[in-house]
Length: 421
Image 1 (cartoon, rainbow, N blue to C red):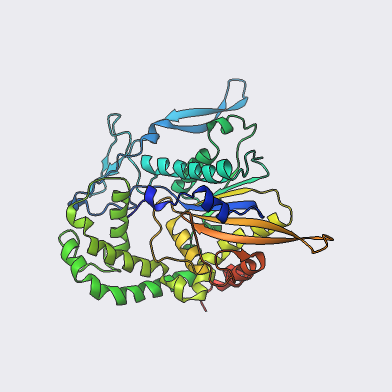
Image 2 (cartoon, helix red, strand yellow):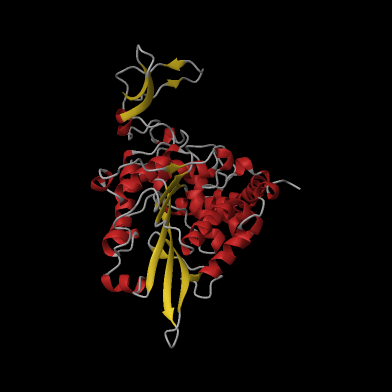
């Protein structure tokens, strides 16, 4: 499936919650890293199979406002807002424009854009985070947004918009109305981004990506030439291949985006055997390198894990941070899980999320002469605990164990390690 279903999310009973968050553990920090919500496909594919060229599922486009700088007759400048509705304009096969008229569909999505359902599912994620951490655990009932909250997204609009939706679910309207200053959302330039495996800025990572994609193609193309080609061959050039045109991952993306937005597909595109084979091949292509190669892990996931670790260490030393939210991507989550040894070989669905929790446990000496503090780190994925094999207790790492793991994965000089020798 492409989207998380209610049955995919575990709802903890009071007894389970008490066991998961025992009284002797104090929650210090929650870092939530999530894939954006449902979106339109990133390319037009399988149009001949009935998948629409346009996804008219972005009704927010009539609510856009732009910040504009205004100058009055006296030469004074002020800031204003310009409401506008976006219309999609196209070209034909020759490159000639098909001009968009005012009567054109006003809810049409750009390729890859967060849809109405994607906005709903991400605000629902925020509501689930609030229900667990704020309502049931009493964590961060009151939060200082300038000191105790960290918000960051990748430069991709769907990640930023998903972050805004998650925040709105976690801290709803009555909370937003009390804000005396705007929240701060951090972004990095593409050249410096690590909220996705940045192959574009790392030649070595790109080289490894190509190598492992070829390995996946060598392994899976003979298999794809069977049943998958029998089903899809009427819609794309046969045989279907990992490295075909279109690529297998592109076909899978289009099918998943269509399913995720609850649009109908021809029965053959829902063939369970075909989808299972495609899924395994695409997972092998995109995440096999993380499972097999430490250099791949260091270059693809090490830096963002280092960022998470730095936040954790700072909190154990007195930083007031309580919540960190990161708007990210499927490749982000898969890279993180595979790098720490907790990958389930399933492609991360829309709005899938990792929760990285930091705890403090206090214990007194036998005579009560001093109080020791132990810090612990736990990772959960879609509300289920992730086992991290390098930790003595795989479900709850000591701070030292987690720091040691991440330090082994974090490049000392990413740009230097990215060079191709």
